[in-house]
Length: 240
Ligand SMILES: N[C@@H](CCC(=O)N[C@@H](CS)C(=O)NCC(=O)O)C(=O)O
Ligand SMILES: [Fe+2]
Image (cartoon, rainbow, N blue to C red; front, side, top):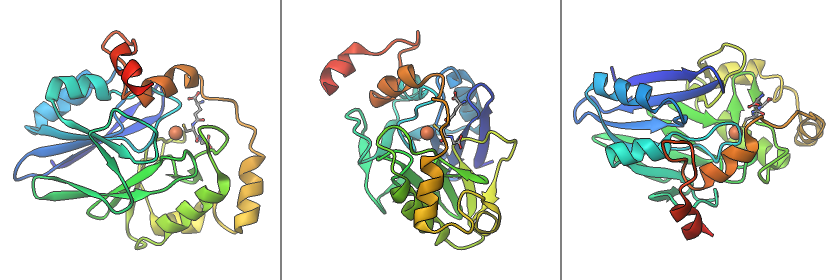
């Protein structure tokens, strides 16, 4: 199997494993702290070598599992160039790519939920992070979120072919996969909105902050915690 979707019930985070079946080089998208042993076991079952960890953004609701995975596998860490992180091995601009075996992962800059948000495309699959959720979209009230920018990023994603599969970073409603046509038809955050009405709607959501925001953002800016859940102060000093 060269593709696997994993779910963290505590944070409703969807993590993805992609593998080139020939070379067995793999990519993991949006791993979660505390799920590293699950992820390593999945990689082992697939016979995969982890080449890249790809983060769609600096998450506010959970700490990334990147640090332990990187230390264990010696893989590379990639994320968007506008994330503000200094710990990445490669910071992705719009249309950049990385190779894993004979497969290619392309980046699509999608600011709005956060400034650094980046979607990834592999074959006919789009990993949309929190920019486009199934029947929803990311909030824009923290981390330099901007509803107008999010509207533009959503239009950019809606321009992909209708049959393109949509795999978000979270789902809070029990959905697991969508496609561009379905989101155009049924996504109430987008459907029927002008740019101005979308901005009004987003700015009026008044959602409570994610429970872990104060822990998650500083940890994710330095690519995650150590295995006891503590920040690696060497990296914090480096990043300061
Ligand atoms: N209750 C969740 C809140 C999660 C949350 O706010 N998620 C963000 C993504 S980081 C979001 O954009 N949610 C979209 C929405 O709730 O419509 C928690 O405490 O973690
Ligand atoms: Fe997010």
